[in-house]
Amino acid sequence: MTTTLIPVLCGLVAVGVAILVTPLAGRLARLIGAVDEPSGRRIHTTATPLLGGIGIMVGVLVPAVYYLPDDAQSRGLLVGAVLLALIGVIDDWLGLEPVVKLVGQVAAAAVPASAGLTIDHITLPVFGVHDLGTLEYPVTILWFVAIVNMINFIDGMDGLAAGVAGLAAVNFAIIAASLNRADAAILAASIAGACLGFLVFNFHPAKIFMGDTGSMFLGFLVAGVAINGVMKSAAAVALIAPLLVLAIPILDTSFVILKRIKHGRPVYAADRSHFHHRFFTIGWGQRKTVLALYGWCLLMGGVAMSIRFVPYRNDAGELLWVGTAVIGASMVLALAAAVYLIYVLEILKWRSTPVVNLVRDARAARSERLRSDRSQKTPMA
Picture 1: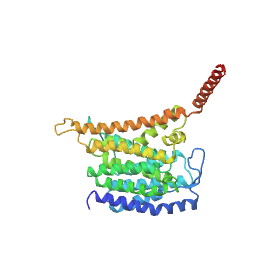
Picture 2: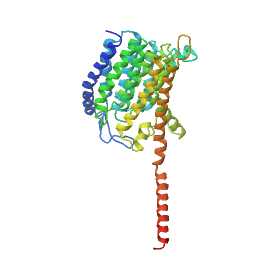
Picture 3: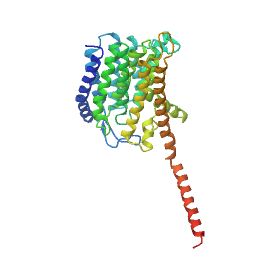
Picture 4: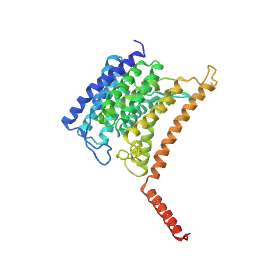
């Protein structure tokens, strides 16, 4: 089979396996009591089984184990992901302290790093390739841990984490295939397929949640395919593409952490300041919020695709104006979407706050009194 057909086949197999296994994972979750009860910070209103990540994990592993080469890097990535998923199962079932999960994430990241799956260089579009030297191991572990937690952080609304991770995986599969990195394309396509199969049960109204089992497993593998499929190449997109494709979880996590630091709260303390919570606060439903964030992900992925596939320089290094215009237009469109969402989150949120409503009501009452006074002073004809 060709490099294109094998990833597509893996994606289709992953869809089917995830659809078959996810309901079984839900039954297991209810049997052992791994159920997410409604609470003040939660958006859902009914008890919902966790462990849906088992369906995602099996969906990925079935095609990946069969088609991926039996080399140290592939084994290291899959072993690390399964190890982290097992930690997630324990957390979903019994609960774990944040520091314990962090130690587990670092340990899991060390597995593929020790097998040679590392960020050993950084490619910058203007400045070229820069070797990281001895920094490759800490940078790699930091990348894994960061992406794991970013996907975990956005898993707060039906279908959000699975959709964002799935869209990222589609982008990485296409870019990796174009760079002839078949291993990464196969794994990324398997991730995308498993996410799609899981969304059958997780899109609003969700029948099951992926839990930390799924969010940490997905984050780990997405981080891995970003390294193996894109960042290890010398292409211009090597650094830019992962940052664009994962822009929404990166921005969301950065905003939340900075806000928690500003208010003196621990960075691991859960709250309702994530993008999806804030959309929900101003009256957007779960479906509308999730679809809007999907759209933003698609736009950012489109920018990454345009940079990868639209020629903007000729062999002499001169700019091609048509290609540059296309890439520029995609960037402007993505920026416009970001500005609109900031407007929605900040301006509309401000307009809907209780204090502003009180001021608005007071002004309306005052205007009504003035109109009433004028009508009373007007002489009868």
